[in-house]
Length: 421
Ligand SMILES: Cc1ncc(COP(=O)(O)O)c(C=O)c1O
Ligand SMILES: N[C@@H](CCCC[NH3+])C(=O)O
Image (tube, rainbow, N blue to C red; front, side):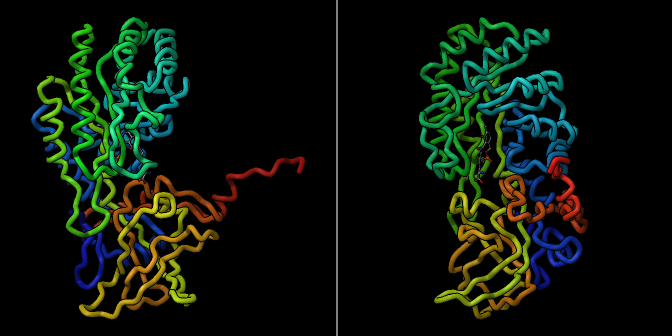
């Protein structure tokens, strides 16, 4: 359930008509609902209320400071994968001891930043990283909590570009070698082994891969404890999928996911961390755009909108589907026409959808791309020198611009022409 619904003939974000946001902020613009974010975060907490836990929001899904602050103020932890994400989490008021640091390529500078600023745990993804972190922490007189990310070789049954738990993926340490690596970790100075970490992929719509992976983590945890390690935390990653289409094939709910966790690892007495991103913020956002032109092609009509692949990359990158809906509620029985919905960028890949049935639209009308709150604004670029898409947060009947659209002057001012040119 989200908070983008039609009432009084128009699509609203909570109590705010999207047309008002378009009039005041312009389009394209991302619009998020605070109520949906709050609700979804609560569902994960509820799913784990049978045990000590921390829900660490995956900052990569949406890293706007206002979104992070909203989550942080509710008690969320954060899963970060770069110095930039770490800085954002801290700037949003999240204390270091609620931040976990994941990622296969942490640099020494990023490790130092997190040790100095405070960190709940590093999720180590390779032996070279582990040795470097040990040396750095020891040189700083620190002892940092670590979990080792294991690769369970489980097929997450998702898009190949976002599966992370198969042996051919770059992530984690093969689970078969984990005991040796933990043995080395225990000997290294500067590290305190606290847990096991796993994350098998994103947009999972089936719980079985989780069951398999978490079963392997449970088995490993028992073996590690037998080897003398104190494993008190399990970081089980994120990845629970969302419905991108409003049909009856909704993916499992957080509560069902929580039950799989309980069944698989619940008897180990560990604190549970999870790292959901998309499931919290995906359906909490839409991309609002205006029709620029309707263009007749050969055998097809194009709806050219002012959002493009640089604003929402998912359709061109993964062939992803986002429901496209008119902001003015279509009359019952209104005539619909098929359109290829495209953006203004000079690539044929700048196509959001082909053959979409939409009611009579004219230039200037507003349409919204649903389910765009996750991996939308964060993946946006200024390709074709299009200003970075702004973001708005709605709560009840109020809204605020939480990232402003840069002016051309601001964009130009970032470049430098050297004196010698
Ligand atoms: C380590 C890690 N944690 C959490 C996530 C969040 O995934 P999602 O947004 O699918 O919940 C990802 C992305 O797949 C990830 O790589
Ligand atoms: N960017 C991907 C998700 C990546 C998840 C990364 N851990 C998407 O839009 O679906």
